[in-house]
Structures are given as structure tokens and as C-alpha cells.
Image (cartoon, rainbow, N blue to C red):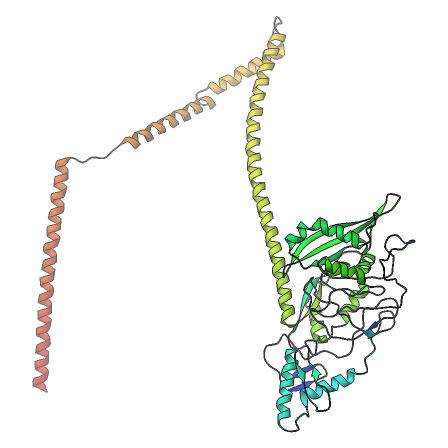
Length: 525
């Protein structure tokens, strides 16, 4: 196998997720604001898209309560996360989310701590001095090792290639040089692919921060009030702040995610949510993180959307170890660029982790569908009950209308007592007599109703008579039928015996013909 270090490999075969031989140049970091220091590294989990940036700002180590800016300092830190660990930030304690290999959130570990010298607004990465040497050593280990000095070096090269493809092991290539460490982040690792995850749409002012607990969902829900009180104490225990829970959901491996936000009340009666930047910066301080760990929190992640500049930079720069061609193809294959973003997946563990999240989400969707189905069934029952009640109320309304009409008739009779019949009443009487005569006409409604009623009574009478009828046969006639059937049976038996005798005669004739044919053959032969 020969390798093309420029961007791919040739002559390879076997099970792969695709060729991911990527550029070895360091990608720009996500440092914003002051000059930051980060170190190049590959990605783990879903990739190290975030960096941990530190600045020489004058932040104190305590909880950042500012006297002039409210309860939380209004710093310029801006963290962003994908609900699963995509975050960057500059300034005091604002790290980049979830470390590699963690099992929390949709994107996994978008930010292992790195150190890489950067500069400028977005921080163009400065190439480490040892990167070219590392590239040369990797090329030597994969193509031309000189460890043994004989034909065994070719076998060693193939073994190093296999380790590089698998993403594990050490590649020995020279007696006086240290071996090359092969990880899943190396550009030759084949177990890589790209998926898609939802882009968060939460604003910074929403103040949502996700906490991952190493506890089951039921335990977290039972201890929700205790956890809220503990978080309030961890955040200073001041009376003007209040910790609220936005939502709780289960995660794979018996973990649970709790989304919280903090409301700050002012003396004038107004209140506001603490921004994600300030709240996350406070939770990331060393003394606060230790208390959170004692509470069972694995990691805290901000829930904020990406700015257009951050989104553009993320899409333009492929992750470490991912082929730019594959990254560009993933952007083209994105089914909904407005809502989804490509995410690299490295190794089977990351694929398994993402599968667990998908199964967990499928269970949640199924449970929600079951709840909706129960609600629909309940609504259908309520609808049937309502329809029956409406019909009942209609009948009651008609009865009440008839009663009211009768009351009105009696009242009108009493009111008109002693008065002569007026012209309008005479006209009404004539109209009523006309209608009554039409109803009583033989060919009109009343006659037809009488005819229908008579037909219904006759049909009921005929049905009752038919249900009472029983068939019976005279005894002499039954004996004659039996005698006739007996004669028929005897005739069939005699016919069967005749047919059997004829068949035996036919077999005898056939046998005689066969013997005569054999005799003739013998005579002529």
C-alpha cells in the first residue's frame, strides 16, 4: 500500500467510513476578543470544534458579583453550545463545553482543552514548529521505516498502515526516534463519518444552561427541589436571585439533563434573566465546579445559538483529521442547512453514543405519541358523550317548546275570552282547516302513513308465522323414499360388479395379446 500524504491514500480496501485524509494544518480557533493561547489537537468524540481560551484579564477567582453591573458581571464572554457540548469562550472560566469522550448532549465533545497560539480577531492559528517533523515521521512510519534494515521493514510498514487505519497503536520506524502515536484523530483513520445535528436557537438573554447529572431521571425529579436549593447556595445564596428549572429529560447510560436559568430581582421590583454568558462563567469557576461535582453534575453547558460569523467559520474550516472534500460534501448533503449542521463522528464509540441518543430520543417520541394517542381516545369518548348529550338536549328542547306552546295557547285563550273572533284569527282558522283537510286526504300524508303502518304490521305478522312453521313428511311417503333409495343403491352395486368383471376380462385379453406378440417375435427371429 502506498500513501498520498497530500490528501488521501491509494490502494486501500476494506471496511471504511470514507477517506478522511485531511490537511494537517491547524485550524483557526474560536477565540474572540483578546489574544488567546490554544494548542492544536485532533478531535475526539464528535470533534474538538471548540477551544479553551485563557486571557490575562483581571478576573477574580470568586463568584463574579459586580457592584455596578448587577448580580452577575456583564463580561464580554460569549459561550455557545449545541445542547450537547459545543462551546467556546474567552475570558474568566468560560470553557468550550464538553470534553472529548463524554456522553452528554447532541454534539458530544466539541471542545477538548487545547492550547494553540492565535492572533487577530478570530485568531489565525500559528503552526507548531514540530508539526512538519511529525508529518515526516508519520510518512516514514507508514511508507519507509528503517527500524530493522531488511525486508521486515516492509511488513512493519504494512502493520503501521493498519494501525493508522484503525486509529490506535504506535508506529515504530527508526531506532533513534520515538515512535509515532496513532490515534483516531490522525488523518489516515478510516473510522470516521459525518452526521447532522440541530442548530440551537436559544438567545443569550434566555439564560439557559444544561447540567448533566450522573443520576437517573426519576432520582433527579424526586430531588429537584433539593437540587434547586443546593444550586442557589452554590451561586451565593443571595435573596435577589432565584434558580428555575426549564426542563428535565433522560440521557443514555442512566444520566439526566436538567436545563436551568437564574432570575435576578432588583429593588425596584423589576426582574430579568441572567445571561448565559455570565451564568456559565460563574458555573465554570473552580470552586463552583467542585461543588457541582459533589452534587452529581458531570458537566455544565450553555444553550446559545451561533452567530453568523461563528457559523461561517465553523463551516469553512473542516475539523482536524477530516478530509476537506468530505466536509464539503457533507455541507452539500445537508437536508436543511437552516436547521442542521454537519457533525463529525470518530470511532465506533462515538457512533454507539450517537445511536444511544437516537434510541433515547425515539423512546421519548414514542412515549409522547402514546400520550397523544391516549388523549385522542379520551377526546373521542368525550365527543361521543357530547353528541349523545346534544341529541338528548335537542329532544328536551323540543318537549319544552311544545309545553311552552301549550302554555301560550292557554294564555291566549284566556286573554281573548269574551272577545269576538278577529279577521286575522279567521284567516288563521281557514288556513288550519285547509292543512287538516290535506292531511286527511286519502292520497296525502295521512293516508300514506296509514298504508305504511298496515304494511309494517303485516310484515311483522308474516315473520311471526314463518318462525312458527315446521316441515313434516308422511310415514308411507317416507317408506317409499327409503325403498327407492335402496333400489338405487342395489343398482349401483350391480353396475360396479359388472365393471370389475369387464376389467378382469380386458386384462386377460391384454395378457394373451402380449404372449402372441412374443411368440411371433421368437418365430421370426
